[in-house]
Amino acid sequence: VDQETDEWARIRRVVDAMLRVMGEEARSEIERLLGPAAADALAGLSDRDAGHLAGLLADARDTERKAMQEAAESSLSFVPRFARGTVKKIVFGG
Amino acid sequence: MSATLEARAEITKLARLLGTEPQQLSYLEGIDPDGLISVRMAATDLLFDDDGGMMKRLGAGAKLLPAGVLATIAERTFGPLLCARVAGAVDPSKAVEVAAKLKPRFLADVAIEIDPRKAKSAIGKIPPAQGAEVAVVLSAEEEYVTMGRFLAYIEDDAITACLEVIPDEALLPTAFVLEDKSRLDHVLRMLPDERAVNVTHLAYEHDLWGEALDLAEHVSDEQATRLADIVAAQSDEILTSLINSATEHGLWPDLLPVSRVMSLQSRERFATVEAISEPATLKAIVSAAIAETDLWADLVMLVPALDTDAQARVAAEVAALSPDRQAGLVAAASERDLWVPLLTIAAQLDPATQERMIDLVAEADDSVVEGLIRSVDAADSWEQLGDLAGGVPPDRLERLTAQAERLGLGERLTSVLSR
Image (tube, rainbow over all chains, first blue to last red; front, side):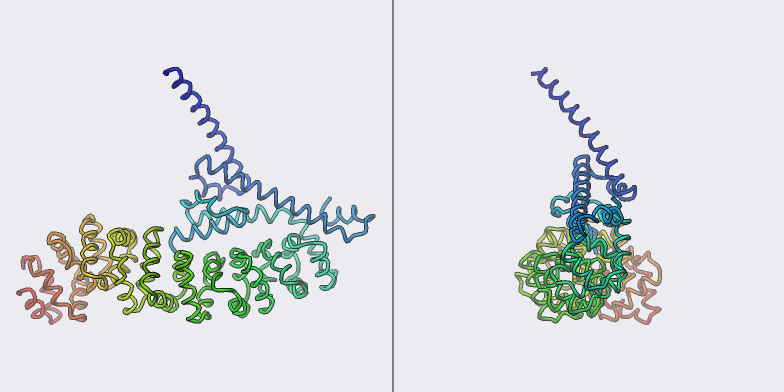
């Protein structure tokens, strides 16, 4: 029983350490995405919540970029096929 | 607006921005509202400022084409997302010219994707009729956050037009997340009483009391009184729901100021609702009131309208406070000339606390003692003062009697003290 308890305690320590690292990474990601002022405002979040929010922000940014890319591609449909490459480069910067 | 409601409104807006539900962000409730605003602004920049260079090039290109061609390109090829992003880079007059040729459905989709901060000049020029058409689509889809952003930048006549078509169900949820709440007074002024009554019923049916209280806090006292009196005129069932919701969700810091702006008749009606005399409710009220001086003044005004048992419970809560806190409450009553309602509370206190209160007054500045005597005389509350001070040894009332003498009211005071 003691051995099992020791083993669980060791696992818990490892998991806690992993969560701490993940929380620190999430906070760095939030600061990178939103800047220091917003990151300061969120300093009180738990590691888990910081991770959740960082994930939402990254997902929202990726979704936005993808939607913009699709909208840009689709907008080129009115340009004759032979000119699309040039127009794309001029308007959308490549 | 209390921090609780302000944080809730900000979380609702942030959730909409990030494409999630507010409940998923409940862990943000403890963050300071100003901090949440900075988070939402930074998140808006993150999502909307990614392609600034491209938008400038597209905006420059838009100058070269006629509005009709641009409208066709917008609807057929660009789509709402690209249009929303490019709108901020297009000359506002040209943007309005193009918008006039677009269908309400398409414009509503653009409104959902737009960062109004970037396109406020164009949004401000939207004609009232077109604004109303867009509002119909947005409210049908419960796009309250979008409407809240949109309404913040349109002109007053466009707001009037929108208000006519926005259903009552959408009014409170939209007002709650409005970007510029200074406009709510104008909106409420234009809302007829029958619609305001209906909105009150909807607040009851959907537990939107937080949203309703938030509205009352962002309008002038005149409009808040109108709203508060409409609410107070409702059935016991509706008022009980309001009182219980305030207790359950910690909204007394928002409801007490509403009770203050009620007409006397409405306040008396509100105070007779049984739910307000529940011990848990009174505890929540007193807790809210002692946290802020202004709220304490609001409570002092409400107490005389409560029944005697409820007054005694409030007094018991006051008696349990530290002497410093009690001194603060006396000072607040003095500052706001609330001596007479304070006497109602004091009459219910135990003798020891009553004596402490009298001592606090006796040790105060002359102006405080004078204020008490003048208020008591103006309201003819000498009997109440006599009941309170009658048992106190005369030597501890010297300053009170001296001040009364100076004001020519010495005999009046002596007669009530000698009973």
